[in-house]
Length: 101
Image (cartoon, rainbow, N blue to C red):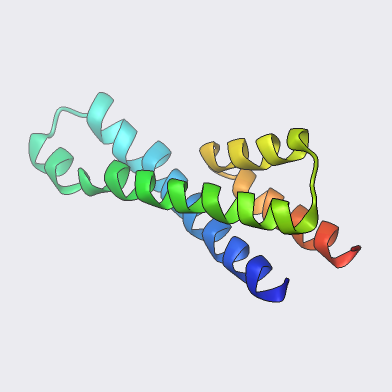
């Protein structure tokens, strides 16, 4: 289980960072600023975020299956990857939940 938890923690960090970049860099540049040259430079953020989020979901489901979590908790942890800070919070909660097994 330590390898699965470590993979999950890495993906939480990656998903959280990419979500912060998406919400506070790419979206404001795209919708608030009228700078096409800057918008072209941050175009990679939503693409990378999509791939990282998919890997985050896989890591979450893998950990949840091994830890035998309920469906409600799995859904909450998967959705946590969509909010900027939530993946950092769920990473700590998952660490505590797995430690108590």
